[in-house]
Amino acid sequence: MKSQVLPDKLSTIAHEVLRKRILLCDSEGNPLETPEQMFWRVAWEIAKVERRYVRSPDVRETATSFFQMMQALDFLPNSPTLVNAGLSQGQLSACFVLPIEDSMKSIFGTLRDMALIQKTGGGTGFSFSHLRPRGNAVGSTRGESSGPVSFMKLFNYACEITRLGGARRGANMGVMRFDHPDILEFIAAKSESDTLRTFNISVAVPDAFMDWVRRSAEYPLINPRSGQEVKRLNARHVFNAIVDSAWKTGDPGLVFLDAINRQNPIPAVGAMEATNPCGEQPLLPYESCNLGSINVAHFVCDSRIDFPRLRSVAHLAARFLDDVVDANHYPLSEIEEQTLANRKIGLGIMGFADLLLLLGLPYDSPEALATANELMTFISMEANAESCRLGEVRGMFPNYGRSIFPTQGIKRRNATVTTIAPTGTISLIAGCSGGIEPLFAICYVRNVLEETKEFHLHPLFERMAAPYLTESVRRAISHTGSVQNVKEIPESIRRVFVTAHDIEPEWHVRMQAAFQRHVENAVSKTVNLRRTATHNDVEKTFLLAHELGCKGITVFRDGCKAEQVLRAGELKKAGPLGVQPCPECGGTMVEDSACVSCSSCGYAFCAI
Image (cartoon, rainbow, N blue to C red; front, side):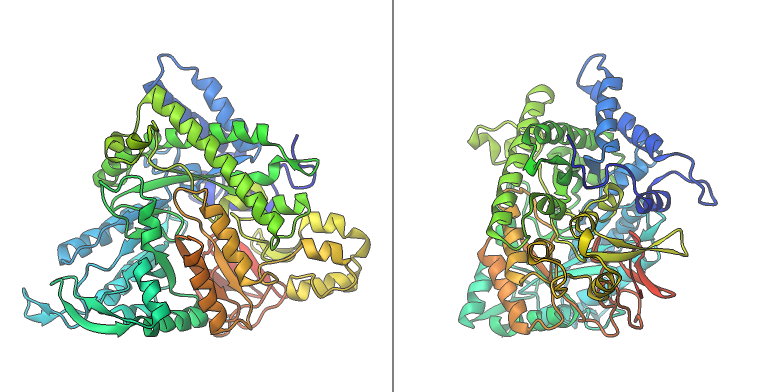
């Protein structure tokens, strides 16, 4: 039985997102298929690959199972799979990492590869750590290098004119090691709101760096071209610069290299240096990964999680994602070779905040952390069981012999199985909260059908608080998006319906860590800080994330951009594009008349 509170069919905004982002359309934007036909298109294309492993398989039966799972909105794959399955280009993955070496051939070759990937809907991550620093000699021209940050600006410009899947702006992750000579320039690279708008940036740090920060110790900067020490910096000074920039602009985040590579299942193949744009997928150079998410809010019945039904969907979803690896049409031969050798998949969840509401649990509570542990332990166990079953019947991934699994006596089909993604677009289609994030607001306004604007209260809140929702109460909620200071609402309801800015930073981090303990890849999570948050709040967030074993950490302080859009229900003059990431999908917020809306998923802040 499904939840009887949350939507079990496509909403108005879901239809609009599907029309704009997913459904096949003619040259004038008119849909050529219905959502039902789209789900069948995807289900058939993915199910067909099972002919490789079974003589005369019942493709109709498999496709029907996949279709029913998607149509019920119990599980959805990442957007490129929904958009491209069954098409001639057929690129189905969302996450890519590309290498950049210290030569013009490599830099511009990677620039070309980025454009080819983003044209098909994928996001790209890069480590710029191997490029020689600014001012370093260029022997072939007798000139000086302009440094990695200048090349990031080149990639950014190319990305801005290459729209993802022809429909939206591209997305990148730029990573630089803590010991690169240009690290301070990199940290400050997004200090201007119109700089590197297609990039999230993160500083890659090992455990040793965090120890040096705590001891205010000096460490060497290494020229990647020569391998020689060129200077020494105080780790505390560098860390303070990271904290200050993150407080001011939301960038950079941190990538914890040792945490990532301690859980690298194929260390003999290589070390991971970069992630996809939202940070949930550390990958080797030329790897890709296809993701999908279970809408866990659909598995609450009578205030309990329906684990038997969740088990069956976790197994079917893992099988679906493994089939996607074979159904995929890869944009580069190098990516095809590396991806097929490791067969990484990333099964995660969405609707977690809604699940907690249905269980009556505040996001910032020990009970919510316990639920996260129980839920992700179960999904990880079942998805891994399916990967092991597939390994037995289809064979292990080709790099299995170079992985950690033989020594553990584990036979698996996939090098990795689980990931927590932000699920911006697919959570809008499913009508649920994104990823593992708390509610961003109790009320919000979205643009629908271009000029139409719809005001929404969270459906469960509207149901529980219905007796108290007078016009004045609705107006009070619309001003902030929060109910914590609306005394007409009983405290028992207010306590459960906490939003991202109602929650102390520590609880954001502890929730991310609770999921990370049971996720093989990484967890996409933004620590949304109040406008009044201090530098000390950012510092404590970064230190706690490292202490608790997170693989990365990102913060965003409300109001940290000049002329920034306020919380739901309020609007001030919008600044340049990109002044604030979308709270649902991380996309670019664009000014549009009385609203500022996300160019990717349609989420909007509007004057009420």
